[in-house]
Amino acid sequence: MSADVLQEEIEVLESIYPTELTKLSDKDIEITAEPDDPLDGAADLRVTLCVHYTDSYPDELPDLSLKVVEGEISDQDIDELISQLLAAGEENIGMAMTFTLATFLREKLSQLMRSKEEKQKQAEMERERQMLEEEEARTRGTPVTIESFKVWKAKFDKETAQKKAQEEDERLKSMTPKEREEYKRLTSRLSGRHLFERNRNLEEEILVEDGAVSVDITQYDRTQNQEEPEEDIVAFSDSD
Image 1 (cartoon, rainbow, N blue to C red):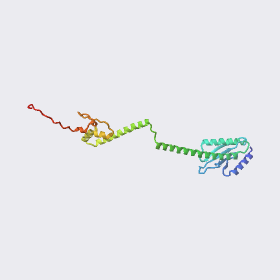
Image 2 (cartoon, one colour):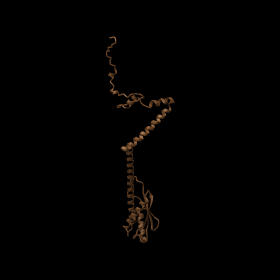
Image 3 (cartoon, helix red, strand yellow):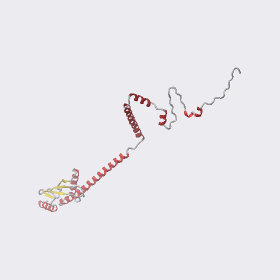
Image 4 (cartoon, rainbow, N blue to C red):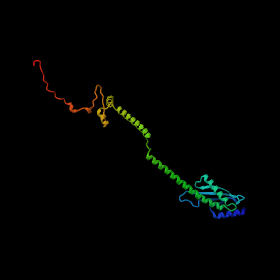
């Protein structure tokens, strides 16, 4: 393309983009581009399309690059946008294509903004889902199996015994030596009444003392406790 033809294209572009286009030289321009359909409430996004025209333009693609002016765009997104711009330029080989590329870029920026918005919403939904599952798991607790119950019961019994032993030690420490001796004697074994009160369904409890005899109280008939009167006894003497 001759310099005059290229200059004519640049002048047309300047009329279309009076504030967005900056001419750096006869073969270099920059056009600031924004999404053509921005989202309400979304962060602003602006990039600069840098174009360097080669001597063979438009029969070959110009050199293209992008600079981020406002907003956040990853390097991967930049590379993807340039790749898409080059593909669109290939479809316009032999024709003035700068306006087409700038328009295409604005469309892709809109798509990129919507894609980022959608990913952000999905990420928020995923976080909310995880938080909900964690809350449900916390309130629901762990399912109880026979094995887990046995483990819990053993731990509970151990902790209970330790607590009881600690309380017992504290109680003994507060007593005098004589009180401790009396307390240990009283708590060394339970009386029959205490055993009965601890187990209402007690069927048989035998308390053996030194020299004591076991008695089955159910076989004891209180009516037999009274002595029968002796029969009249006739006494005979040798003189009769």
